[in-house]
Length: 54
Image (cartoon, rainbow, N blue to C red; front, side, top):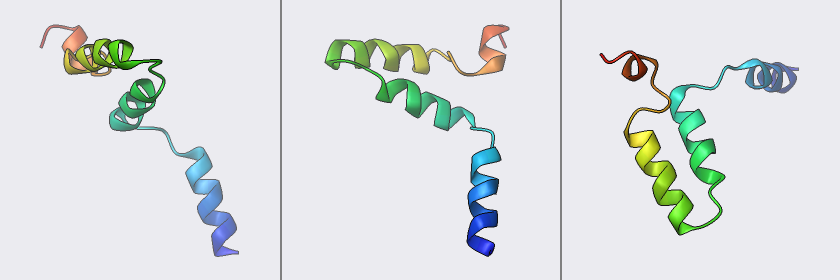
């Protein structure tokens, strides 16, 4: 029963910034695309405050 509860909690969990960044990088098709995506992540693509200029 506890295993089913843990599975349900994992399914409902909201991904954090690190999870979103990792998933985005994992979708890269080649090395050039990966480097481009890494620069976007480094520039704060997934961070809310960086879009506002803080």
